[in-house]
Length: 193
Length: 295
Image 1 (cartoon, one colour):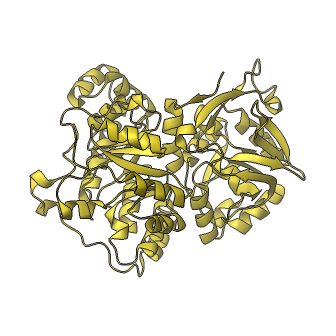
Image 2 (image 1 turned 180 degrees about the horizontal axis):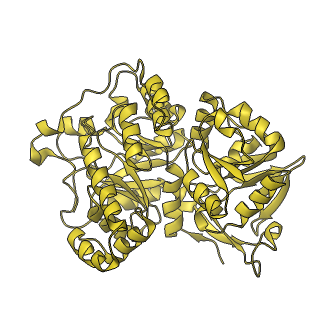
């Protein structure tokens, strides 16, 4: 399977090495033609304003929107913001997922945290279905899901931290840096289907 | 498990999100806005850029908290600020402001000639400078969650940034092919914690994100550092001491992303206006070199 990782800015190398360990052929994507022949695309964590600006300047917005019509896309943190319809702020978005996000919703870096959460959608992917250790770095909140989007996981207080819509997957946290590959395996299944 | 804040993974994690990006020195809220619009991954808030600190002389200290807060309120990207080497009270003040990263920086006048800050004591993450692998791993041992090679700040001369990056990355390469029984001797030679040297060997890279800094003034300089193998770049005086900061800032961001694409590098290097006035490092008296501060 051929998976692209948007490599404009952010922790794309962490995603690439996790996907390669899972057996995917990984390619870094910086220009529109690099999307050709891919089965899925990862939008990494990073700064969403930086990624959005570079995606606009290098003509990637429309090609990624078109890609997402039929192929799987997984966005973590900044990538989830980029997928969203609305980030309550003027910045370039793909707008292909029916989720509304609030940037830096948990506060600045001193408030960044990790926590264990149970994610039913991942059940069956690991023996005993242990909770996912979710790392939140100046993380966005998925404020609401609508249309075809469904919440996949929430914090105990009900705040949504992961969502899915067809072959589009979004997490407000970073499985790529905690070493838990179950979200990436779920994404590869979506890319395969 | 209860929610945990300030774990080393969370501290290191923010630096991972900055990778492939440019962190720009800004001295006003207006600069910060220009940097954010140009695609900066973060800004470093300070009262004077290194070139002016050099020119001004005297003691360089932590910036006015009012200025730092104004910049924090202006942009949505992470804001870093500098403290003097060893000045843990300046760091306590920045932590109370809630800045996203503290740079314990040789660009300011050192407050302690023997000891750096014990960075494990803080909830906010720290970035520190280094010239070689030993210095990098001593800082990580003290709790730094990000490293930058020092270069020579405020010069616009990239030669020291290249020297320091080659020294760090070259030693990591040497370490990778080294038999295990030689690692302790290297740790001794580097003056670095043995466990961290071992971890670096196993990972084949520094255990934390490693940016380049000090003398980067053009898109080509940024791409050079990326091709040498660093994770991203800091640009200090190079942007706001140039003729057209907004344009140069954007060009350096693009060059850092497309560092392997000479065609794009040529395109973004066109018509940038005057670069900062450089100062050749070899013309600076040895005792005035900033990079030698830190131990």
